[in-house]
Length: 536
Ligand SMILES: *[C@@H]1O[C@H](CO)[C@@H](O)[C@H](O)[C@H]1NC(C)=O
Ligand SMILES: *[C@@H]1O[C@H](CO)[C@@H](O)[C@H](O)[C@H]1NC(C)=O
Ligand SMILES: *[C@@H]1O[C@H](CO)[C@@H](O)[C@H](O)[C@H]1NC(C)=O
Ligand SMILES: *[C@@H]1O[C@H](CO)[C@@H](O)[C@H](O)[C@H]1NC(C)=O
Ligand SMILES: *[C@@H]1O[C@H](CO)[C@@H](O)[C@H](O)[C@H]1NC(C)=O
Ligand SMILES: *[C@@H]1O[C@H](CO)[C@@H](O)[C@H](O)[C@H]1NC(C)=O
Ligand SMILES: *[C@@H]1O[C@H](CO)[C@@H](O)[C@H](O)[C@H]1NC(C)=O
Image (tube, rainbow, N blue to C red; front, side, top):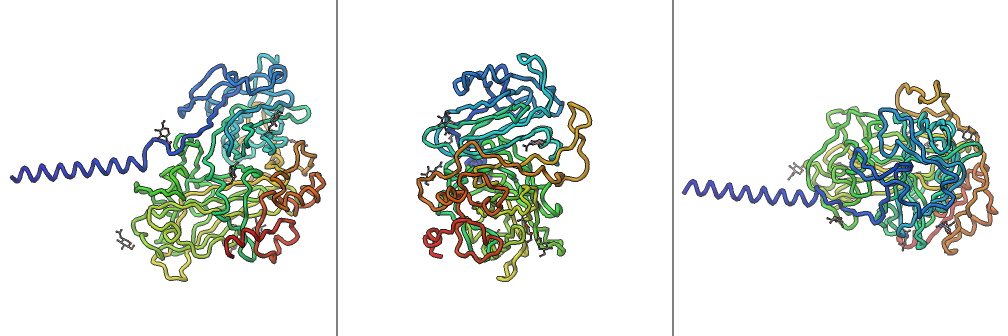
């Protein structure tokens, strides 16, 4: 009898264990939460399809001749890199080198796409070209549909000036594709220079992930009174500057939810590393507001929190170098997953971007409704460019406990963070190359020394040229912003003369007040519609 009871309880335990496994599998394991409708991985100059070390299949551009102009063979060459040992073979061993402007017209579905460009500035040999190319020979511009992504770009100078030791440059953009289903990608060499690319990746994005519409108003931080920013989903491109699994580990493309995003750890940006980084294998309860594809599970189940044994600490702080003269979108990922914090008014904190308050009393559980329920919050800041050099500026992020309502703990939490740059009023995301560091030997990147941080001095003065694409004024005349843009600028590219004009993107600033000095005189459009809709 006793034996039976024992066996029964074993059986019950086994069933519970099995159920728990099933439940856990439902929230944490494959299949991927998002299946991209468009997924193109092109390894330029490669002879055939190759699988990368991380297990992704890269195809050769030879299989996509239908996207290429007929004169491709006359103005471009396949080239092979003299490869450093630390550089992954795929997609960096081979490249396509362009001697004059060339446009690829990719056919994809409508909607937003990640466009990832991979560059390895090295010595290249090209059989067809009868010779080789030095990494300093490459200077070029890249446009995607009506956006300028890179202008007179030197991958060599960019990699040399980067605080990391990575000799490759990866750029990630978000661009929209309309019903014409075309993504036109143009490479234009600067005078007496060449263009090149090693890899191109195009991946579709769920339509409501980064452009969430007016139901999710985006607070404009740094204004005297509450102001909101509306991002027009068909006239705005983004460049990813940072994507962090805060307090957690680096996540590679295959760890993502199906968009192949890379999530870095935050160690290079956090100010006091000694703060705590809990990481628990708890379930995450996704919702229609925050679906499972928003971020990998582990982003939500790891975080940086304050070390509550250290009374000297008064918050969590990060610093991020950004380019002056652009608008930035900050996307925060939160999830209360620590057992001790299981109700409202337990962990309450302020969020400040560059000392301007985004939230005074932020309580994750109050916002999400429960523990282990993730949420995302977006904020926009304008980074002025007083000297019009588009130089690097530091933007600080601070989360400090707010004890006013007597919460149970004196603590703060952040699980994930993304920072995107928005295109300026001319449709451009480009900045001048960082100040050049002379190479000691051809074929070798200059040695990096010192601490991570800003390394670029004053960039060369901006010498704007008239862009070869129409100014961003589409949108059916639905907004005064677009019309004013045309009239005032007369179609001219006046960015560097008038920093105030930089913020006149079609993505209009909506403000309930203009009393703030930092925005006075900037001819952004003030809407009252959104404020009315919001009942503010
Ligand atoms: C994605 O595709 C896989 C394999 O076809 C499937 O198992 C999975 O359920 C799909 N996921 C979504 C969110 O559609
Ligand atoms: C932009 O938003 C509108 C309305 O939400 C939607 O109909 C349209 O498809 C979106 N466009 C893109 C490129 O996502
Ligand atoms: C792409 O380029 C083709 C050929 O120049 C042009 O007809 C088309 O309008 C372009 N599409 C977009 C979305 O810019
Ligand atoms: C909920 O939080 C309180 C306060 O931190 C703690 O005492 C309690 O054990 C927690 N309850 C559970 C079920 O974890
Ligand atoms: C932010 O405020 C702190 C003190 O409140 C000050 O020490 C710091 O210099 C300020 N930072 C900026 C960027 O203004
Ligand atoms: C940060 O704040 C300081 C002083 O409040 C200001 O001078 C600086 O321009 C701001 N930086 C950015 C990047 O907005
Ligand atoms: C292009 O970049 C190179 C390298 O940084 C620089 O020397 C040159 O002045 C730039 N040209 C223009 C027109 O900005």
